[in-house]
Length: 309
Image 1 (cartoon, rainbow, N blue to C red):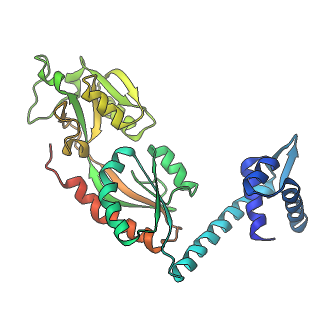
Image 2: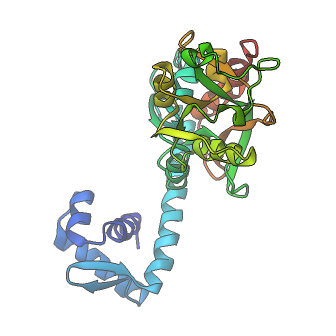
Image 3: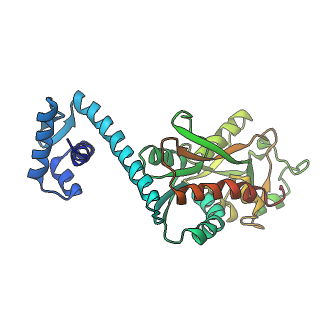
């Protein structure tokens, strides 16, 4: 048994087809088949069930697959540690975060990072929370900046900042004589029943939160539009198409002002946590450790730099 055979089993299991797996591994199909068969003879039990060109894991194969994935990950971690010992400075770092946070956080952080590690390559993955969690669990990103991970045993969630959710209201709505008067600049959701709303999809964290806020206030919003990103929702609000829920940091940075006005929401003063989420088992090579330290140092300042709305 060798490292190549572990990777062969994992790839064949993922692809469920020997031909596709061979192409992905850049070896011939007969060589891959012979290697898998040799491994099965060595361990004394089939790892795959073969039917009409498709391969599925046996019970033994499932156990072997889980162990192989873990072993290959451990091998990668050791390679990185040895690379650090050899003073290797070029690394690939994959960051996961939403697009609006990327615009706020990355320019300043990456400017400082590249002053120390100019050789590194960084991939920025801008996706919603549920996709970022899956990518982190599949080892396809190194860390993400988002809400805390529910699995506190295998994942570390370090608090960076807390943010409120506020309403972005088109300025034309505010000039409407029928627009409800606010006390201390705070709006009541139930007073906005006659105005159209723009919501994020319910599987987005902000979309789910905004719906729960409406439900808690016994308010049924007049939904005009549903979209996939807060940037799109805010852009549409700026075009006077509807009211939307946004993170307070966008209000602090006067995004789309004066086309929209921002208001805190009565009864909803709670904040949501913004965390640095990483796998506890991951090895922190020097460039990654430094990048994480910059997030810890700078994000809180970014989210409190402007006065409250």
